[in-house]
Amino acid sequence: MKNILLTGLVLFSSCLLFASCEKELPEDAVFDPRYPETEAIVEKANDVLKEADKIFMRSNYLVELYLKTASEKRIVQVPNFEQVPADLAAVYNIIRNKEGNVLYVAEFPYSESGDWENIYESIYDDKGDLLLFVRKSSFLHEGVVVYEKSSYYYNEKHRLVKKEYLIKYGSASVLPQGVTVEFNYRFPYEKFKTRKKWLKAHGLKK
Image (cartoon, rainbow, N blue to C red; front, side):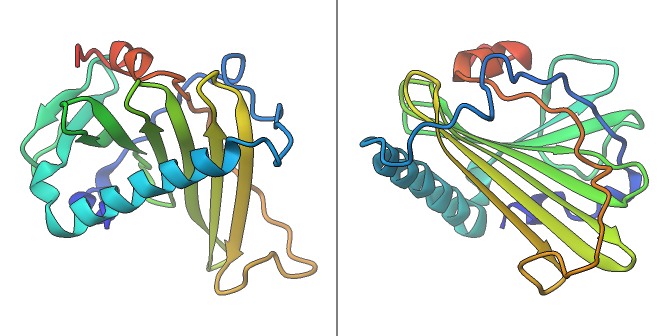
């Protein structure tokens, strides 16, 4: 899976906080789930995720590796993550389509304490519009692993057509009765509605 490319780096990671992009991509303006194109959008996005998983499992040489430091805006491609700078802020896994355009991005901000792990995934269609954004977060609460997953599906007009949320508390699929969890690791993050905007924000031309 994707995390195999990041093994051993969490212990010396540091946090990167992002500005929210909710004005461009609101998270609460959900269309009617019966919107006719929703099913096709979800299916297409999930097909890309499945293909990305296959690449990570069988052909990870196709995955481009990048890192970002706290002092630089631009991300830099690296052959591996064996040597990283002291001010490391985040690393990235990028997969391109056959035309060489960014199709999938996984961003891994760093936790200096190692108490949490956040992953932000973006899926872009062939035209460069955001199809799916996924936020994953895991952390310990009183010795129990809490896992969150939020998925946002968008149409070609950058309107949210479907939103999903999943939480696990250890092996339970819901928070047990009487358990109160403080979600201290829901840091601000940014969603880019087009591949072009993502590339520009990270200092890449293509």
